[in-house]
Length: 161
Image 1 (tube, one colour):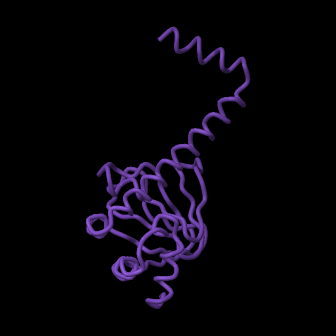
Image 2 (image 1 turned 45 degrees about the vertical axis):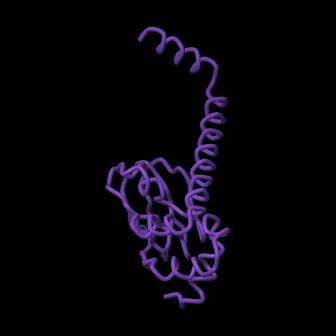
Image 3 (image 1 turned 30 degrees about the horizontal axis):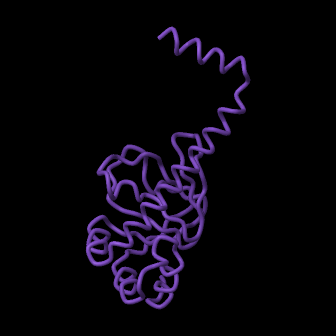
């Protein structure tokens, strides 16, 4: 368990919270739940309803769709944030790679925080935008590595449909 001072210092270093005032961070950090997960534990599964954002305090997690790994995240990384805004099922699964401690912020806690300090919404939008750009770069890199014959087959297949 983190002390209240350790929790404040940790939350202050998380990118989506860096521009927020300390008095606000104290309140936000105090309402977050601290959760511990064992190695190889599913924190949540693709398709599940989600209403919370997680921040890795220690350990590493793996974001994946089925067996396909999308990324790994460590200390200070956030995940699960999309479900806070769109009320859609989780778009991927997140599992621990090792013992992992996380802070959890629920949708209601976040909405209360946004009412008080709208800047947090801007920071989350920036983070989501950055992740979309990273996925676009990965997709583009993968597409450029597909052999020309496979690209021609994809074009022919799409034209005949």
